Length: 333
Picture 1 (cartoon, rainbow, N blue to C red):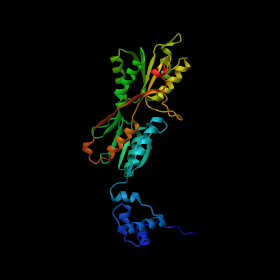
Picture 2 (cartoon, rainbow, N blue to C red; picture 1 turned 135 degrees about the horizontal axis):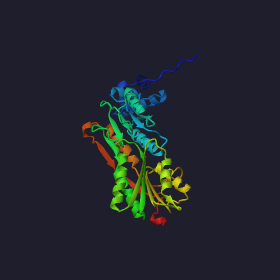
Picture 3 (cartoon, rainbow, N blue to C red; picture 1 turned 120 degrees about the horizontal axis):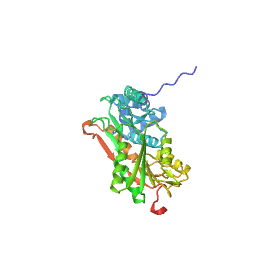
Picture 4 (tube, rainbow, N blue to C red; picture 1 turned 90 degrees about the vertical axis):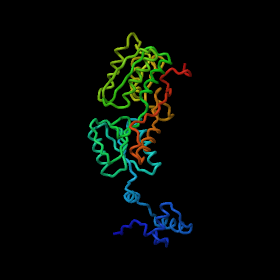
């Protein structure tokens, strides 16, 4: 039976290079060392295929250089993009990411938080939905889209401004009567402010509007029923729709097509998130774009910030509007 080769240690490197173990440590940590010593150590590291044990380093520094990310899923394109940027932001700071997909289950969220703490992560970034979530103060936690408590920072887009922007854009593009279509959590979270912003935008532009609001778990077919109830003699009562997410907008556009309605000629549609299509990378619909990269950077910066007392309870980042072929922009008119 072939003897298993042992993993080289720092002592082995020192022996191979003919230097003290302290010299090896200084080279590995980027400290000042004579050029000839550095060359000997680097040659020994390459010859022995030595790799630094980052976990052991973390234990000595009372850090593991690992952060947990709690997300509902990566199936939704917006969540997938958010995970990508969180990973990049952590990797840029030499941190590893422990990804936990909760699938909206409250029990899973709590179990993953417990697991993350047992793995001694340096902190947790979570987009959560459990109304009874228990977060231990000993582990730094940054929330996305939901204010959990004054001691836990929340990072979100300016959802109120986004909703208002959507209403005003529909008015500017000639809409006279619009509808707001929403499905979402009953929790008091930041995305709920899109509704208030939309209402404010409609009032400021004297834009007539109606709302169809579904709770989590209800079928999107309820939107088809709503649209059909407002469809008479080949015409829809609304000439503009604001959907609370791009995903909903995509489904609604298909429903409009099944009614023989053209988008944007007959009905203009604006979504929310900024999801792009596969291939050419264009937006799947006209949309309010969330600054996903900035959200990720802000979360990671807050998580790794040493002074907890200086962390703000809520940070709202600006959104923007992007045309995506489902509105009558000037260039398309």
